[in-house]
Length: 342
Image 1: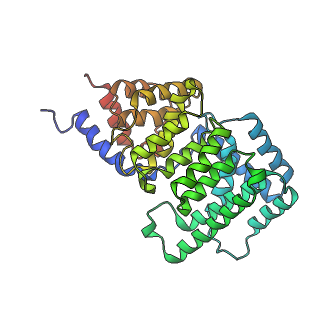
Image 2: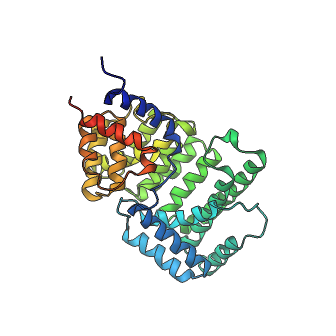
Image 3: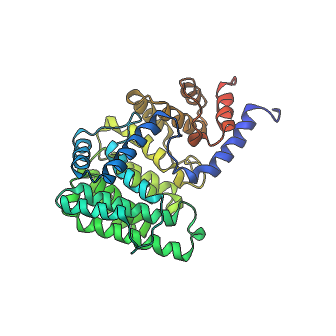
């Protein structure tokens, strides 16, 4: 019999703890990490340019990201983070619908300056979604007051209306599909309407990860779906990309939606771990960032793949990413378990 301090017992306790944290995976990279610095730079740039009403530079920046497909060192699209900048900025402050909102006024002036460009419309929709989430938060709906719920709903409906009205020109940007799907999830669209948007988006922009990420989140258990619905959605997305790209996309989809599971994504055994493991290798071959390494080591530990966990953890060079492991002991438990003699 193993002692109470054995690595396996410690790991079992750790995995139970990690499962309880799964729903809070909205958090991004930890302060001080390279990935955080990249994303934060984009957000600060967006904030400063909008404050100065430098709409020309904002337009040029979005156009560059659309054309180049630039990513961060982890492989996520900078264009997505560009629009996230507007969501995140506005999510930080509650301003009731109908009250003076100088920031929204700036966005409206941008729309008037560039009415045919997708960028200001998508920025405005992102900002409205952020304002709504300032009232909604990321907890259970039962924790939201009726007053805050009403504000959330009004802002989300307003964002959805912006997206619907600008579809003709905005669908030239892949984020129209991702933002529309997010708004639809918040508004409780039925699956048919959701799939109509994401299927069209994935067909038009194969490999633009933000679209299948949002689809998988919609079908996750915490949004009323099931683990097997997530798996079906992932498989649906894989059909839109070349075969060589499928493992990496599969791994990223499960990473993106991990917070939508009540327990580990691996609890129901629906995950094709060999495919995800290959995807991890493929992602790291192109994007060997420490942020990726630590997240993938976390998943390998949850999947109880000892050899994979050890291989990945041995490559980690930076300090523990708190937003990956949530507590240092989880990291050390996985390290001890993966390095114990079999």
